[in-house]
Image (cartoon, rainbow, N blue to C red; front, side, top):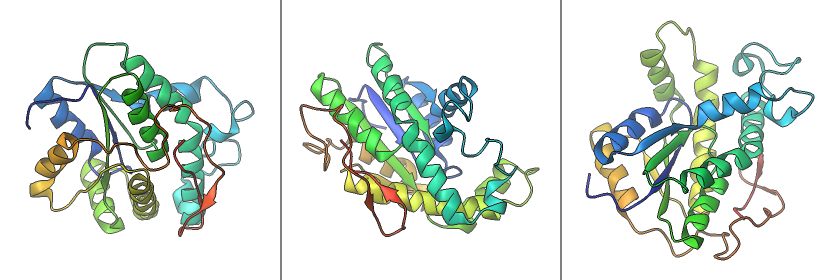
Length: 237
């Protein structure tokens, strides 16, 4: 990995695509601190209830099945996963703001980082003179994701439904990332992933991600628009 120039990296992608391993490699090579956004998600959910904040409890509320991906249609699970991620955007931005007060480089990684909030983080860094980067890992093959789950969680049983949702979510994240001017790195071929990820991080960010104004990183998002998946999508503010 070439010499680090950034101060904060947001690494997004669907579950099971290899974000944790990638974050560990980046941190090991640069001395960066790793923030697992999943830990933040768990804390926020622990502090709220389905009655208080239903958008954060689609998958653990009183009517949710134990394994939604095996009970609900994948389109429904995808829609709720996106809704949950969007509801968590203020928490993600709070983590970014906090990390920018600390003179230690960091990598924030997690399934629930949306391209919209990552674009806001890049804009916030630009507005405050800090070098913030964001990149999304992409794996659109459900069978490959299922194999990754099997290797990572050998006692987890069949993960076909979860992998199908993961592949769809990965496509949505990739499409939204590109629309927001953020780099997307395909997970395969594995033997070149590290070099391609490094290149994406070392490249100078776009002058301004699409739909992200220079002077207003905290502006309200545009109205929801439909994309090709049939689920709501938002432009980065």
